[in-house]
Image (cartoon, rainbow, N blue to C red):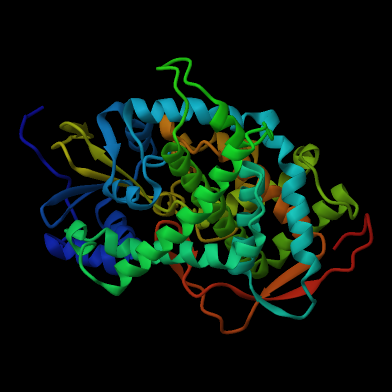
Length: 455
């Protein structure tokens, strides 16, 4: 292999600074065009920055698992430190390993299952305020629901009265992300721009909530069996034996506050949209929840019997993965295929692009939960589907997210159908997560189903 650096070929009409402008205008369109034009390895430059799209399951595994020590976080998560600090999502190296050791016990299977009752309780409270025939922004409803759940299960805190303000602050930080990703954004942050002022105000608002929760728990440090209790009491027995400072607690809580509700809310919103467009799948879902639950709230023990509900969730995350792109940065020269790229090359992997690859998903735009039978999953490469990432940095809350998504879909689908308002535009908006650009206006219809009756 030559020592000369060589970037894979890129789309013929996209080069130099124009690549960054095209990506910024339409990230998904740019990457889709790149993959369709150039295949599994695509090279381009964002100004002076070398970049590469990897769209092959085995090569993605190499980056995320086999050779993960060759990579650091990409620019997106480096810039995310402006909000998340040194939390699990953004920290690296030995510090990341330490923080993950401290947080891991809160996500063990038995503890995660204990959160199920809280999840269905809040879903039951939400739907009690719904009226059949009314029109709701389901995206907003799901955001408020998952925000309340993550605050209660992980921090034993009730933030329902603050949900609107917190949700608006989170939306502001998301909308500011595009500007924070611009070249020289470090300098832009120092200018009196309205967008940067809004970002700083939103961060202050979120900090106030997180630090208030920490202060309350320092004053009453009794073990409540939640994540915050475990983080406050944990000591790093494999490291220096110390516990977390308030700043470290803040960073971890902010990370989980964001990741623990934003992504699940997105999945639920896209799931209701897809069910509204596929009534045959919706009917099968209703049949299962009616048969298994017979009108009662689901519990964690019901999950094995809610197999089709989980398949619906998996297929929704295939078509609309909340973490639509994952970035890594080479720490040293790296050989991928027949190419050798230099250190500091940005390596992009997109679940959105990979999950719609016809080689692994025939008729890829069709919503088909039967893609998730054990046999169908075994026939595909592991990293043809990676909504939670992979390797040492795989999402620590994956089991939590699967349980929450399945229980909430089952709870709400027992009594409600949702229909997209005619003419409402449905456009994915790829920010940090994959939100619907215009929300999701839907008409809700009550289902009067007697126990055991099929829909």
